[in-house]
Image 1 (tube, rainbow, N blue to C red):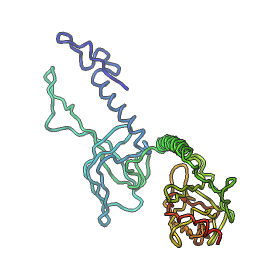
Image 2: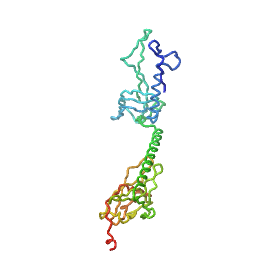
Image 3: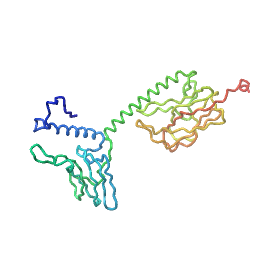
Image 4: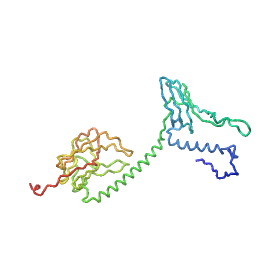
Length: 327
């Protein structure tokens, strides 16, 4: 950005307002161009379309009957900020809005007397005023819809989203790495459904492979800690399913109660940029015989669909005695 170096100015050496370069950009003009340059750079990020008049503050538009009223405010237009005085007029459908740049003089600051004894008006406020026309031209806009509220530049939005997604993915991967370290410290180790010497998946259920750009979710696992059973992981089914057994818990992991009922979220709509609000939730039914069952109808999900089992936990029934086992 432009910046004026004032280090050469001292109590006995002054700098002229326009320096000695009267034919070029210097002095005060240089300073004014510096703030214009800064505004344009900022607007490049904040403004979606710099070719249009963009409302930065105020300028509320109302339509009382056939009249249109625009409250005072500020707009960005052609690389500069402009004040907009309050305005009202009769508006007809199809009218074009003209944005007119005007220069108003501050009455409490001018005229200013110069060293030659002459008075000049130099303190200005740049304004955009509005007028209506039935004809299109390069200087007007098709109706008030061309007045935009401040919106982030689409390219900047995409870039920002990419950065955030990278950060989220990195954070997620760090969490998963730490989670895996924690899982590996558990003794005995959690049991992964579908692994060797573990309960198998039933009825086409399987671990969810995750979403590209987000990461791989935890496989379906269960663990017993101080007589409480914990289940977590994300699973998927390739098609529509009604009341389907997912897997069976082994002896020692059965619920103490006759049955346990849990509500789990649908995760089918998870994407790299976020997740659509869950439209559906599902019921998981666990019997005191260890059957873990998807309870309900998933025909509204399409195929495949995914659910998260994380958060399920319940008190386990005590192991039967050897006498009970013999019976």
